[in-house]
Structures are given as structure tokens and as C-alpha cells.
Amino acid sequence: MKRRHALALTCAALMPMVAHAALKPGDAAPEFKTTAALAGQTFAFDLAEALKKGPVVLYFFPKAFTQGCTIEANAFAEATPKFAALGARVIGISHDDIDTLKRFSTEACRDKFAVGSDPRGQTIKAYDAASLLPGVANRISYVIGQDGRIAFAHQGSDPLRHVELTLKAVSDGARGKH
Image (tube, rainbow, N blue to C red; front, top):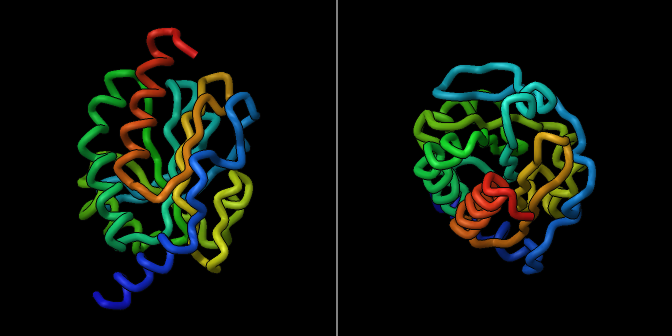
């Protein structure tokens, strides 16, 4: 437990305090497919397929089962019904292996939304979410519109702010605000 807490503090210290992500609203969202877990079960997540059903909230997190990442996953789990009511789907991505994420999807995500494994960091790099620490992603959240473009982006260390701001962005988009 002390090791996880130390890693969480290290991740927080190394993350930029800038409130913007590298990909900007209007940018094309890089397409990706990944092995994901929902409620402890694995499945193939395909961004292009998910966008056919509505916007996607894609968030990157440093490491499963660390304090900040668990807080963020709990908050996204609590907000998932609100996202679903607006037609949006949530997926979190980290470098963690799929077996770790199967457990995380049940324990921290409370069986409410998917988490995807990106052990080689290809999707993390494509979304400019790579951190200075190998095997750790920066905390960045995106809302991707059905047109395949970034509608909203936020980077910051406060895990609860990511949920608050992405929910507002999806809600505003559902009402036609841009």
C-alpha cells in the first residue's frame, strides 16, 4: 500500500499543472482499438464502433489502484448513469495489464464503465497522454463527438474535476452548445 501511495504522489508531482491537453477541440481523434474490461469481463473496444452510438468520454489515468485513480474511477462510476442518459459512453485507459484492469473494472469502476489496457502506450502516445514516467499515463480527459473530433479536453491533477468537466461538456453538447 505504501508503494502505491508513493507512486500516486510521484505521478501527481510529475504531472503538468496546465489545464489543457495536447489535443485540442476540433482535432481529429486518433482511432484505436483495445482490449477492455467491464464488470470483470474482457471485450474488444473499438472507438469507431462506439462513436456510432454517441459521444465517447475517454480518460487516461496513471495507474490502477492508486489513490487518485481509484477516486476518479469511483466518481466516473457514480456519474455513468448521467453520461448514459446523455447518450455518452465512458472508457478509461492506462498502461495496466488487462488482468489488473479486470479487477479494477469491478472494484473501482463498480461494474459501470469500461477500462482499456494499453501496455505498449500506443493509444496513450496518440492522445499525447504519455508522462515522464515509463508505464504511467498523464491524467487527461477527452470528449469525442460522433464526428470523430475532440469536442473537449482537460488535463489536470484533480481527478474529480475531470468527471465534473466532461459531464458538463457532454451535457452542453447534448443541448447544442459548443
